[in-house]
Length: 326
Image 1 (cartoon, rainbow, N blue to C red):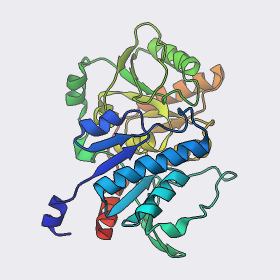
Image 2: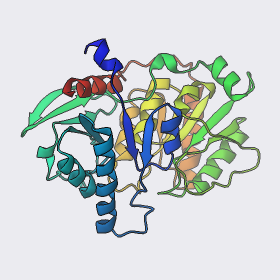
Image 3: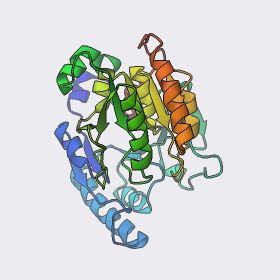
Image 4: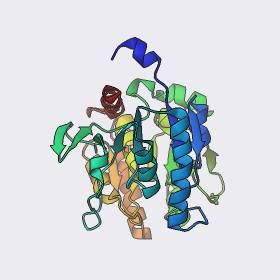
């Protein structure tokens, strides 16, 4: 791609994420539209308003390529893109779905390309399916490995003591599953084992998590930049977190959220355990939590190499494919 063309490239985000200010703080133009989960409108009215708002934005920005990043394209999105009619459409579609819930999308012919961000250990490549090019790329991370801070610099940036033992908790936003009960028990067990606890506040959480005494909370993005400040990590096994655990190679306890509508977090966590120092447990009972902490402490006692041997350059590969469409 000629450098002169890349220099003229402009990006615009239209997001349903309540933490849209993070996009803007990173220097991008962005417009917010309320998610259907938090809208008072019924599905039909919400999609009509989405079509109108997105349509206005498309006529203003006039993009050459539109990328939808999500599980299932909304009808309002489809209608707005078809009405605009001047862009190639790309779907960034992660696909580790629960086997009994996966289904095919009926309008795949509208897409010029479907990009499939890979799970850890997936092989990348191209394949044709119908009239649509499907591109599987390696796992997608927001930062490159060299952008992660080492332990010394990460602790200094967060104001953590050099010689203490720290455990980082990031159990999700709590919008789908209740993280407080299991989190409190895990915190107590790790405090007893001599760890100081740091709780990562999720930028899209809609409720405040009540933390036990002595727990420090932090709000920073992207969190993975500081992962190596911590001796252990306890988190849910969503896509982004799992990619970051493999990238940082910090000993981790992954707690799959089994209440998701589609995402198979259980299977993803076990895939990650093949490529990183990871313990997997749902931690639903006291017995499960006791066993998980015991296994995690044994894992920490093994000297860490902290070298990621899995390609994690999916973001760069996906960007190259999108630029080629321009």
